[in-house]
Amino acid sequence: MIEIRNLVKNFPDRKVLDGISAEIKDGELFSVIGPSGTGKSTFIKCLIRLIKPEGGQIIVDGQDIASTSSEFTLAKVRRSFGYLFQEGALFDSLTVLENVAFGLKYLTDTPKSDYPRIVKEKLALVGLKDVEHLKPAELSVGMKKRVSLARSIAAEPKYMLYDEPTTGLDPVTTGMVKDLITGMHEKLGITTVVVTHDLNLALEISSRVAMLTGGKFAEVGEPAKFRRSENAAVKEFMEISHLSRE
Amino acid sequence: MNLAEALGGAALMLKSVAFWMFRSKFEAKETVKQAVKIGVDSFTVVALTSFFTGMVLALQMGHSMKNLFNEPMYIGTMVAFSMLKELGPVLTSIVVAGRAGAVVTAEIGTMQVTEQIDALYTLGTNPTRYLLVPRYIAFMITLPLLTVFADFIGVLGGCIVGMVKLGVPTSVYYDDIFTYLEVGDFLHGFLKTYFFAFMIATVSCYKGLNTKGGAEGVGKSTTEAVVVSMVLVMVLDYFISALLVAVGI
Image (cartoon, rainbow over all chains, first blue to last red):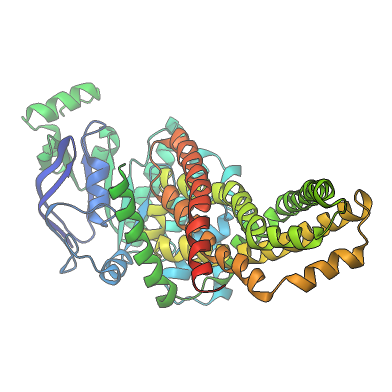
């Protein structure tokens, strides 16, 4: 379980997270939505301490990582996470095989001889085959996202974080990524956190949805309840997204 | 970014490099890859630079000596002294800063702006361990080696000009060198390259890690890294030379 208590993060010109609290239960698919620039990526990066918050607690399986400066504590906690970056963040200089096997090398004790088999399995799970020898520059945007997802799940994380998984994708690839997120969540039982500005996606796939605005969660609830929210920010976002409240 | 901020940031980065240098498993494959990129790929430019520098030194000194003494005297000694103590290490460092330093900054900078550095954290490794330590080791190994090659090639260039243009026999040229040159003269230049290598690695890596603002930011960081490295090579050269002279090397 991930507990977030009173999380605060400031940038020089503004307060991005202003005392956010939430509980993400094991097995849950929790989405954070909001317009661009509201601090969604900051929030998800704080969860894995890629960004250090100024205040509050982030308790992952009983361990508070918000204020620790121990590289080893952070590395240990990060082992339970997979992270899908907005642009994939594949290593340009490595092949697909080396990219997907990267986590196996540093996060697990898997023998090197097993890498090709595991990589093949993970790529198959995201619907790719025979791409092991390619470099990221030779892949389409959708393929990069899928390889990145295969890399994130290779070491079998307990938690999976998705940062704007459908940004910049065409509708077909968006649908495919949506299926992958729900597939990974259902097949592997991974506790999942998605940050997105795609309200439609969030309402379709999530167990609970949170609306981030003004540095706080304006509304948190199950999709059905979320749709009927009377919160002004939620109502406005629903309208902008052309979604009905039913 | 002001100077105090940059120095503080660089100091923290060095602390992290020192920590991971001795605490982590040696990244042999990545280190060899970087040594090839920094050393082997810079060899041709270093060789050409030092060859022509040796040639022009012999030419200028030969004519000056002819004007003064009617004989192109001590050409070998002067070319070798200049190459081994100053021009070999300094020119090699400048070439490496401009070529390999730029590559390192651009590569790390691109990784920074495309979140690949963050990805390293999420995949169980520290960027210092995976990116910086191999590059520091590669710079520290290859720059001194390149300098040794540059010294030899420069002296050879001087020898060719001495022989062809000034009529100085090869035996006289090398006799001049071995009569007046001491191991300390070679060490003076050679030891300086470790300071230069350390400085170039620090500037290149630091600028790369602090890149912001997409492709434009990568270009800006790369230019800054090259300019700062080149200026610092000159500044450090004076102070390290003064220090080495003070301790008798």
